[in-house]
Image (tube, rainbow, N blue to C red; front, side):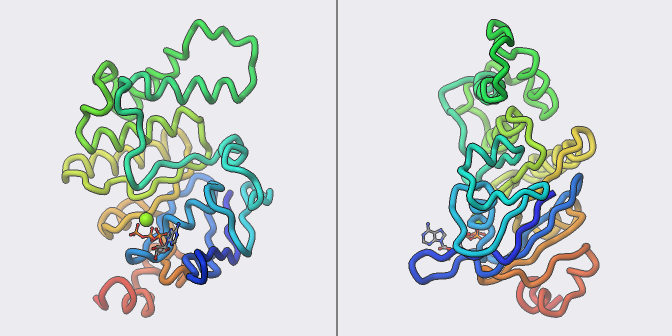
Length: 244
Ligand SMILES: Nc1ncnc2c1ncn2[C@@H]1O[C@H](COP(=O)(O)OP(=O)(O)OP(=O)(O)O)[C@@H](O)[C@H]1O
Ligand SMILES: [Mg+2]
């Protein structure tokens, strides 16, 4: 579904992403791991078009999307959430998702869809699937940090993505919230048939949800493979897993 081939991105003369490679197959949950500053967020920004790559190719369903602007890439079915929570804090939970659903519907250009419905059904169904329906009337900014991150996933779902990209989805969460988010990610993959690409520092989380892991260091891809292959890789152990 997604193929990143030898992609580079430098900021001035600093190579943040340096020949990264990544393959994401349809229906898979893929993790990108690597120390702080390895280039994970930058790679996600390149995939979603927020940044333009200097070299290499990014293919989505066989089509080269490297040159497309972010909204075109989004329209093709790639949506992301951010490392730092990105919601409308003054709107309600319901409204946050509704805005996303309405904007998706407008983009999908069905001019005859009755706007009067205001996407209530679709919005509720998304809130239900992430477990936030009972908080739909709450002001988003008043939610716990964990719920705000879940809300961000809900907003992303409003876009009906095929590939959902999550940048540290459990960062700053309590252990309970983390577990709920892990369950949610698994549910989205199996229940909604979503393909999920995420990055995460907590190795327990990575090894409990990912089917394939790509390891980055200094902007480079050290390896991508299945759990055992990555765990037993010498270079990965030295560079990242602390040799154990
Ligand atoms: N806009 C920018 N301008 C200059 N340097 C940048 C910019 N964005 C990122 N960098 C640098 O590129 C490198 C990779 O950053 P990036 O945010 O992709 O890392 P990361 O793997 O996501 O790290 P973390 O785990 O801390 O989130 C870092 O050294 C960072 O300082
Ligand atoms: Mg990051």
